[in-house]
Structure formats: C-alpha cells, structure tokens
Image 1: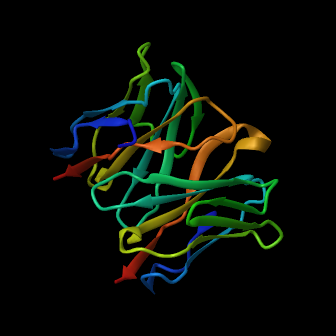
Image 2: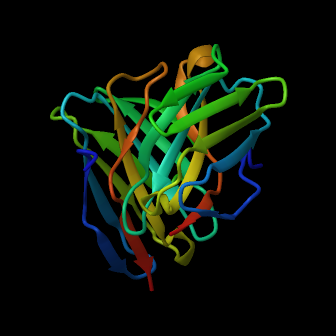
Length: 115
Length: 114
C-alpha cells in the first residue's frame, strides 16, 4: 500500500516559469516531509523539508507547502532552470510522533525544464 | 557529493549466491539506513542502524541482514539471491537516530541477478 503518492509521473515547464510538483499521503501519523532530487546514476539529493507544525518552508528558489487537512504537499520551484531537470521524490516520516525516522517515498515525478 | 560512499557501484551475480554491499556514512553521522529501489517502485526502507545497534526494520526479507561496525560503516548481506532481488540498493545516513533530520544518500549499488 503506497502511503505517499505522486500522481504525476512527469511535468514539463518552460525555463523561467514556475514548476509545481504535488504529493499526497494517506498516513495521518506522518509529521516530517522532505523533497529529494535525483539525477540518473546518482543517489537522491536532499532539497528541502518541512515539519508538520509549519505550512510553508522556503529555501532560495524552492518552497514547500503543507496542507495537513488535505494530506497534501507541494514543491514550488521559481524560476525553473534547465539544471532543475531531474526526478523529484516526495518522502515522509513519523519522526516526531513515534521517533521512527525511516522514510516513505513516492514514486517520483520527472521534471523537464525546456530552455 | 553527499559524503556517503557505497561500494561496489555494480554487482552481477547468479541466483543462489550471496553478496555484501558496503556503506560508509558521512563524517559525524551515527545512523545508517538501507533502501531498495526495484523497477517501477519507489524507494523501500529496509533497515536502520544507529551507533551499532539496530534501530528500525522495514520490509526486509529474512534472507537479508545488515550490521553496523564500530567505525560506523555498514554492510548489507543478501543471501540465496533470487531474480527478484535485482534492484538498486541505496544507503543513507543522518546525524542522529530519530527526530526531524534529513537523510543523505549514497549513489547506490546496482545489483543484477542472472
């Protein structure tokens, strides 16, 4: 049973525009959420995270939004750059509530930024 | 470069064999996690070690085992290999064993079973 879902396998965006990647989860115990970027033949690279006590976290061009009532989070990249082209994974854990910080991953969204 | 080192990068072996995957965590990180990524699957958590002790277990098969040594490097042992064990195996590390902290991943070991 997939507890973290990324329903869009791919997304194409023009350079300079906003990229919005979406993620839904089913487990209400999740309280820590992360986004990872992955290039081919490399491991996932940590991008940004958010705790359930917040609804927004920003780091440069990357902003993560969390809607706990909808069990939904999104990653906004503004402006998008060709180097952002990669597979993006959403992940979640029950770190605060249970102390277990093993991650549950979505299946990824492939972002292509068109120059 | 995440600072997490995994060896070997590629491993090709036959069914029924046994292999060992190795992971060196980032300097200062006490936790090591192992994940498996099969074809068309997201990363699945296998097991976590914290400072030498097993901390959490996911859907790890009984044929698989792991350990973390005093120098904090970790090994994942896979035995009686089956075709379905072909996958990418990632190791990740974090500073502590719990709480809100990101995990940093190595580049993985690609295991192919012939």
